[in-house]
Length: 251
Length: 324
Image (cartoon, rainbow over all chains, first blue to last red; front, side, top):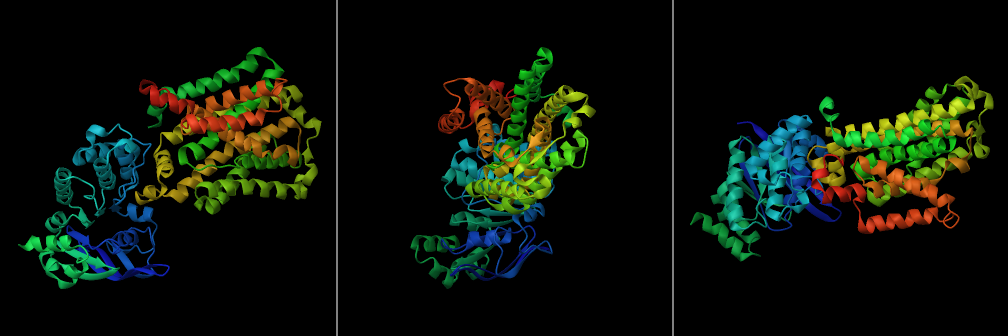
């Protein structure tokens, strides 16, 4: 089993705020690893450290055997690590197709324009954006913009994909569709690290879970174990309904 | 890729416009029209160059005229002090402008939005102060060409025609380069920086490098034209060369025609320049030319932020292939 990502003793602070404290985990190729935790736990910060948006004060990020700590995000992307954003960031004045083409052009394979457009068409088909290819990205609704985020990341043909709350803000039908899409992505052999608040989805999709609370890694393991972990239940007690949902997975 | 892109009607429309404007002086053999069209074409080249930064990349280079000034000074120095031929001096001016853009790209292009715009104004003022005190360039009195220089180009009249055709060729070149940039992968990277630089970088766009190259490309031709302009002028001095208002007018031209489009800066510069000629020669408006520039910028930003070509593209989807 090859490790695709190793996060070793990573700490990140913003002034007086310790956003991440000594985070450690490993992600084997082909796995879906879920990253959960209450709001403000540092999940998105961890993504930002992994893909180079932030440089950690301590620790190392190793991607496919290469130390990528402190590399700028565009170099990380070119090595085959793509991500989506929790708050969608479409290139508004470009068409959907152009948005996805950017992903293919500058991603791992560094395709030329013509080949990138072909990949873009393929990926738009996969995520169900093909009928909207010619629209301006700014005119899409939230669910479509989430799909666009996903499509751009996929077009890069990454080894590892970081998904930051792709289900948030979607209605139940859209969630069900997106879960199918995530399964398809895994079927293509792409390893996934996903932040998710929609518990039933992350519990069902993930092979393993990591739980963050106040920048600390408080639990790690299979979804069933983690949901029984007293520390995790305590972390979620501020939101009893979520704690209940965690419990429900077993039952 | 390039052969198929040369079949685009949008490119040919813009080049045709430049050619039609450019053909007026030789057809009429009028010296007045030649001088008018020289200025007009010069601004078309400036606006199209600036568009690569402003329109494609989304960075407002407020002091873009500095490349014209520096290119003018370096070119003039090479002509007068080093006796270089015009073509080589113009190339030298372009290279100097490109080198300045490269240095700036590596330093101030990490600034965003208003900070970058302010820094470019600062560069313009710093360059003025430098040249004012730089002895080899004549300091505050500037330099002038010996009239005999024009002999090797077949006399002053012939020399004026040579500069005119050179500017025409350079303008066409800028339009062609703008098109090639726009339809390339590099150009796609630039527009994604314009739309969301952070998102673009996460997708793998090497933004610092791409922005610097865009800046360099947009500086070369203004630098070359600077050398041609002051060769034609016969002398150069700081008061003449450093006209920050020309920077503002360049921005108005790009915005008026349509930032980020190929035809927009050509149309905008031609329209604005014609209007200005009218305003400058009309007894009522002759002192109000810059007022007009300011007001039109205000009106454009408020009512048609996409410019004329952008506005037409939005309303007439069928014409999009032509109105690049």
